[in-house]
Image (cartoon, rainbow, N blue to C red):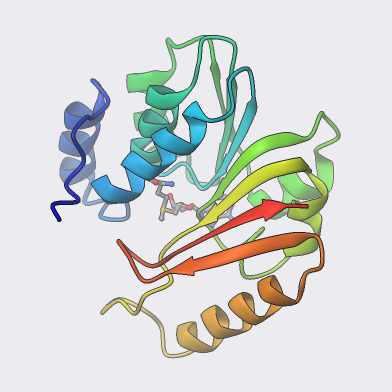
Length: 191
Ligand SMILES: C[S@@+](CC[C@H](N)C(=O)[O-])C[C@H]1O[C@@H](n2cnc3c(N)ncnc32)[C@H](O)[C@@H]1O
């Protein structure tokens, strides 16, 4: 079985070239990106949230799958990497890039709930899972990644991942499936 994605967003190559120039090596891998596009396509007209934009690789995949009536709000603390995402994808009227710490964003956000959340930084994943869950519509999907060990992990990261997966499974309002695939993913539905 060849699980190489059979499609890719138009902007991806240029985004990854800028990422290489910046030395940014945290973009999602293509299989995760393909899954993001597939999940986004399951929510026509939906509101999509990404915490941790990076240079916009994940956002490009999400936008690839999103219908014209969808919207994406993507939050990134580091303005330098966020600027790369805005440069390549900011012309798309479906996306808003916000420069903010995700913790502060979680404190402040009072808009409508989301249909799909891709949580790619600590807030909303390793902590404040309940606050993030409150922002999901019933039936909404939650994707977390980077759960399989990586050489760059700090010594306490495995404990953080284990505690996150335990908390996730204990949530009565989330039905989750961990996947030993790509960088290690967990997909959950808000019930
Ligand atoms: C794994 S990278 C994101 C990759 C991107 N989501 C993708 O799929 O290509 C994580 C990003 O989260 C950002 N980040 C880390 N902590 C954050 C926080 N507390 N609030 C917002 N962004 C944060 C980092 O600056 C980094 O760009």
